[in-house]
Image 1: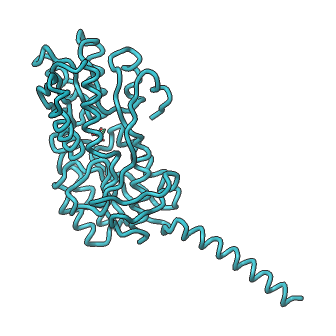
Image 2: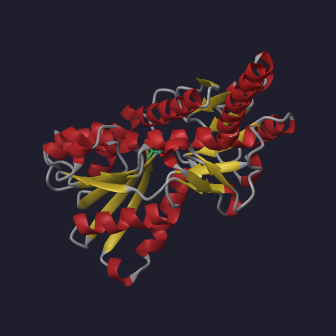
Image 3: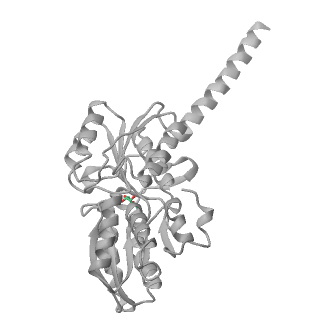
Length: 335
Ligand code: RAM
């Protein structure tokens, strides 16, 4: 009797252990992974939403997450944070790079010491990281911005781009695709007159908007492919005589843009969910750090509530297509 009881207990324990170890290996992630997020800027509302998504993911797989970074988006402002994270022996660094090259030597140093490096939002040169978690296909974002602004301008007139910093990899890639799209004959009557840089600084973006309106009196639209820029441009225009004459569009968060959509300054703009971007980047980093993936094209991994994701060419993982927001749908979104 005792013997059989002992067997039953042992069997039950085995079932329990097998269940636990199956649960752990289903996700295949190590416990207690130390993952640090380094946003472009610590105080940019977009980056804050993305970082929150990352921290939520890290909590799900019982890691230890933190967010550190500069208050400006300058090319080298992230270097000191990377150096500290190397000293702290983090398992992974997840970074939205302010410059394609400035951070690469430091990220290479991190990787040489076994720290996994994932870029998200804004990439480095490929040798600076193992994976890049991109919000959406860059070509699609760039071409989509021109399709949208052309519609808002009635297919003709002058427009300007109000970008982030001159060295931002993501904005520069999108602008390159905007310029490609503009070569199509259907845009022969619209002209890009200037690319201005607000440096993802609210005040500078505000002043740059004012400068564009003064320098180009016939301006029909401003495209700001940055959430900081579009919010500042909309704020300036909404209380100026240009309201209703100069369209503002680009990439913005629904919560920052809602008031300007409601007061008619902004008809339509685009974005993806930054929270999901951070969430996906954290899962990518955890899978790399756990050895579940090595970063090769074609490898798949489990990204929690976002399901199975596959690594594409050049170590790129794409979140999904952007959404276009306007008066008809903006109240369905809260980020
Ligand atoms: C700003 C930043 C960020 C970009 C968004 C759209 O918040 O420049 O990198 O992805 O805009």
